[in-house]
Length: 149
Image (cartoon, rainbow, N blue to C red):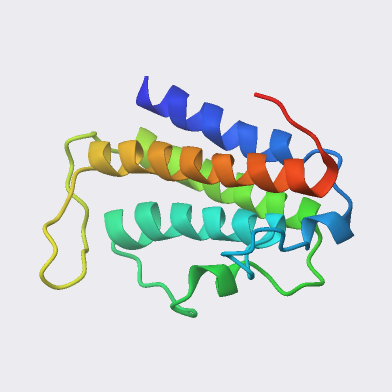
């Protein structure tokens, strides 16, 4: 059930981006978040999948900037490219979940932070992805007036 809910949220990310031009996908329309665009948000979601499932759960070190919005891609990366990378990262995450038990603990957490289970991580990714889908809803309405479930 958890994997099904997470996959539904993941699929909705691409759906919310359907029909946007490259120019629209680069617009930062939220006054309180001047660096957040559809493109940076998709890049952030890819980074979140990578960070939780590969870095924290498997313990694979991550190289890159500390700011997840800077990890998205250079501006010349197309929205389709970013969505494809997100889908590929989600597929790796699905495989990690399939290969482990939900009660297995992550291999790494920052010093002073208690290790959490794969179940906790999957549940957190449902919450994280759903929260950012709300951002995509608002951005999409401000960009071109599109609203929807």
